[in-house]
Image (tube, rainbow, N blue to C red; front, top):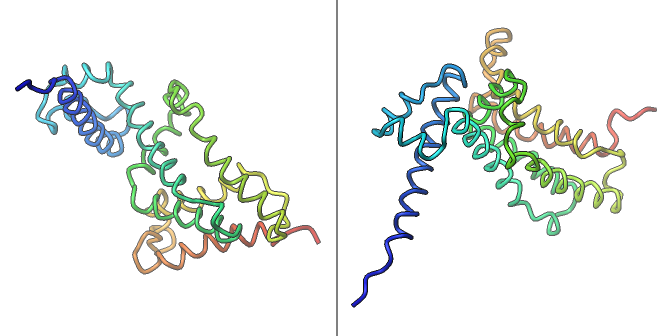
Length: 218
């Protein structure tokens, strides 16, 4: 009886270890920022060594970039679940808006990482080959929806896919990223459960209204 090769099992162990490191690293970078996060602390939480982390990722910067790649890839994966060919244009764009809302609501660390990387003026994102074209799929998706809406007559605004993406993302991002300052100034926690359903509908309503011509020059 011959034994199975050990290589596939070693690869699975390596992939699992890398995934676990990324999970802990994401939490540390989101909590402390790029400058404040410590690889020693990540290693301590992993019950491993800094040397092992560097073995897999090479440096603190490469680890941070890998965390960003993972975080953005998860957003793109969510967007790929929308099968626009089976949805009417209004339903499709509303679904995209509401799923983006859901993702940002459930992935608060992603919001923090994006805010941190903006402080660094996207210095690390620009160094990632994996992230270079990662925005294209969502723009293609939105363009398909916009074209379908123009063809059906549902949308009258000559909209740009990047503008629509910004409209959706800004609402969903602001609600989480600014919840504390907004709450201190206006006395309302936008991320509180009692506001969730109303705001989720609002982002969809806003995008649909824009595409249907709300606010167009009279």
